[in-house]
Length: 348
Image (tube, rainbow, N blue to C red; front, side, top):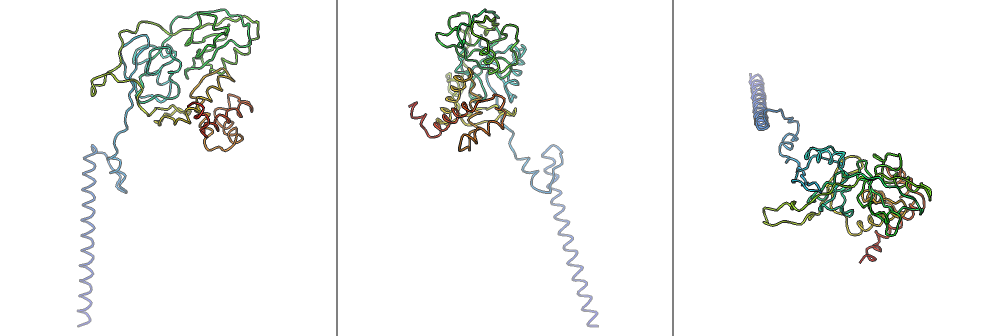
């Protein structure tokens, strides 16, 4: 009897323990289900995965900031609001939708000025506070030129969307003596060769290969011109006065892979290095392209000698430019000078 009584007590204890555990588990499951229902109600009835806290983390993430830029047509227009683009072509499409004209009408954009100022061209990046001015196609003109010198005296750049245009005219050059050719003119054709869709270096090469003494016909398109007296800068309601354009220190950078990214403005040494690279591009190739210069600088990051730098160039999209070994050495020279601060000392 004592043995049976002892066994019975043990069985009762196990039953009580099992029932208690089951009850606790049922309570926990009920509590979890209640949390699920609460989260589901907060998220408009959508199911949330509760295997981890990812559902809660997703619910708590703030929405991404939408970048909005102010825009006007350079010849005069109301102010438009532009957003939702990740490269220059998409930007042109958004502008054309805003003002209801074809994107092919856009020659280029300048930042913070309506003037044809080649130092203010929109290239591979936009400051978050920059004001965009759109320069549209204007009058076309055809000019016959006799190439009496080896070089015409043009520095060419492009808009990133298929239009090459004149960025600089060398003083005393052949082109400098032709008053109808102006900085900012789009080079549409040379003789019967259509240049729409060509990069700046292709146009520069074509002009360079024309033999001395030859006569060529250049078809140009100048930017649309009109009065601008009725256009004012947008006001800042918090301060009650008009701010200067482009006061922000962050920029929206268009990447070669089609994506865009917000970056801090380049440091003093880096900017001087990029400017020096751009000057070499102009001297050696007759082109001016700050975005290309920035890409070249980026390829040099982490490289300790010109051989590694040359290999990085060859393994990138920059290979299509066909830089010579001598040009690579020149580039590496200004890069190392900028890194060491020697260029910064010369500029100060």
